[in-house]
Each structure stands twice: as C-alpha cells, then as structure tokens.
Image (cartoon, rainbow, N blue to C red; front, side, top):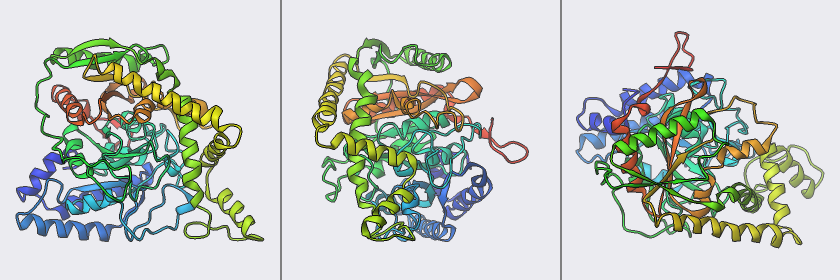
Length: 493
C-alpha cells in the first residue's frame, strides 16, 4: 500500500477496499518510524489528519468522492494552514500558527485530501540542499549521508521514503525539480501564474510557483488538476478555462520533437548523469520521438541574473518580518531600532541574511541601473531564446542537475558551488515556463538522476504525456529506498 501510486490508492478507496483512516494511519506510522532519521517533517497533527480521513471516508461512502478524496498529501511548510504551525523552515516563524489557509490548501481541502503533515524546507525557500532549515537538515533516503536537494527537500524525501504518496512543493529557481531529481521522484513546476501564490510565503514573487511532487507523472496530473485555478486574491493568477491535465497521458509519442540545447550537454555535467540522460533520450527515440539540436545562448547568464533578481525581491518581501506584528521577537533590546536589528539578526539564518544583503545592495542608489535593471534586460533575452527554440521543437530535455546528490556539508562553505546546483533549472523560472523532472537512472553511489523536461507556456499536458509514456516503458520511478534490517533508510530495492 505504501508503494502504491496516488492513482492506484484512489481506485482502492473508491472500491472501498481500504479506508482513508487505514491509509492515513499507515503513513502516520511510517512517519513516526522514519522521521527521526530523515527529518522530512517539521510538524504532524495526527488527530487533525485522522479527522480529515474520517470525513473523507464519509464522502466516499456517499458516492461523491473526487480523485484525491481520502489521499494523504504532505504539504510544504511554506503554505499557510489554518490552525497549524507554518514556519517556512525559519526561527522567525517558529511559533507562527496561521489564521487562514493558502489557496493551495483550500483546493486540497475542497478535493477531500488529507493533510498528513508539514514538510521541512530550506529557510524561506532559500537553498539547494535543505541544509539551511532552522529545524535541521533533511537526509536523502537513498543515502543518509547525502542532501535531498532544496528547497522542497522535505517534500521530496517524504515521497521517496514512502512517508506520503504525494506532496506539494514550491519552485523559485528549481526547488521542486532539483530535489525531485536528487530523491528519484517526479516533480513539476507549472507555468507561472497557474497556481495561486495566495498564502504561499513569498521569496521572490515574480519567480515563485507552487507545484506537485509524486512518484509518477500520472499522479502529478491528478494533483495539478486540483492545484491549478484562478484566484482573485493573487494579482498574478491567470484566469483560464480549467483543464484536465491527464487527458493526453496515453497519447503516442510518434512525431514528438525533442530539443537538445547544446549548452546543456557540456563538460560541467558529470559523466554518470550524462550517461543516464543519454539512455533516457534513447528510450524516447524508441518510443517514436525525434531529437533536434537547439541553442539557448543566454542560458549561461541564468545563474547571475537569478542571484540579482531573486535576492532583490526577497529583500523587499522579507522586510515584513520585524518582530512587531507576528513571529519571533528578540527577548532583550534597548529601543525599537535595537529590537529590529536583534530580531532580524537572531531570527534569520546565514543564507537568508546573505540574500537580503545582496538584494538590498543591488536595489540601492547607484547600483540599481547597473545590476537590477541590467538583470531584467538579460531575463528578457533568456525568455526570447526559448521562444526561438520552441519554433523548432515541442519539448526541451536535458539533465535536471549537473550532479547526483552531494554529501551533507560538502558545499555549505561555498555558496557559488551551491548556487550552480540549479544551473539547468533557473532559466525556466526566469522565463515563466513549465518544467518538470522525472527519474531516469542512478549515478555515482547509487544516487538518483533526473531528466529535465521544459515545455512551452501551458504545455503541461504534453509534458506529462511524454513523462507518462516514458514511465510506462521503464521502471526507474518504481525503485524504492528500501529500509535496512535496522530500520534505517539508505539501500535500494
């Protein structure tokens, strides 16, 4: 049961072969067993989760169930949840109990899903390894000496370790796709504006986007059907007709044109990652797709552009955390200015402080034109490259990350190397394009490798079709980090 997909569990619930209470109880037991080692969850409210499960069972009995009714979903602790702790992985919000629900939480509640718990994350979603969390690092279930990726590392870990059948994440520069790749699961960042940011604690507002994380592409489609939708409370929310993102899953891939950017297949990609990606592309050719070379010349600018724009927006968004209205407040201070300084110095971790300082600097008088405006111009060039590329192909593919999961602590003292972990994912955020990662094999140390798939605007159904057909032909998405005899994760089934 724990290894079943969301689609399979939904069918079992609908047939009354299992109950949501039984299913939820099984995952709660798994969390109790593994979370002390993996640290994937910040908070779990078993009573509240079982109450939702009992309500879901009543809905199923009435014959009015939806596909996700009764399904336990882990929620990234960046989504405000009424009556529950919502920390964003920070000391600044370590005591914050939200008085309202994020739009994404509302959508899952309306669908009858069960909130199984709030997952650990890099502080305020700033990080690529899940080591910046105030609540400690998350461990990769394939190898507890390795990072799970970030910032949605807790969500990725919870799905890979079978502590939840699916989870939500957020993606500002790769924070769904990179941890999905490093943990061997599937994850999707939708087109910017498709998923409301209302109640999703902001990092960089022009880049942030919520999305689903699960074992299979089919499960991602079922989750996106719930998460996507217009929300008048979010000024960037797109008003579009609802779609069924599972509608094209079984469509043959004959005639699909896959763009291979020459900038993605370079020496910076580790050989083990390159081999797994090339093997996956070979499978796509066998399924009827054709490959064409495309060029994204401005891609090399993605990392520096991102680390000007994202910190600039973060410095503005995080100014609200001052110890006055809610959240952490320094216990001792001389006056108001001293309270501000001490609260922010004590409440924010080192990486958050670093990005606030960078952002404030690039927005300051004398540097705004040289850095921020220049980065915005380059952002347009990056987006234009994709426009040209999609005239030649339907989807773009390459590695999600240049390496497999690195060891805990390996890059903590080298921020530049840490930032380069997202070298292939950032461009999609800058352009607002949908992108996803699926597992395609294992590299050094038997650590997972992910294939990155980028689509044109609103091409989620086509991307999910390509991912689903690949998963029908392979079994990488079915591999499980099997528990060792002593109960510790870290071996492969």
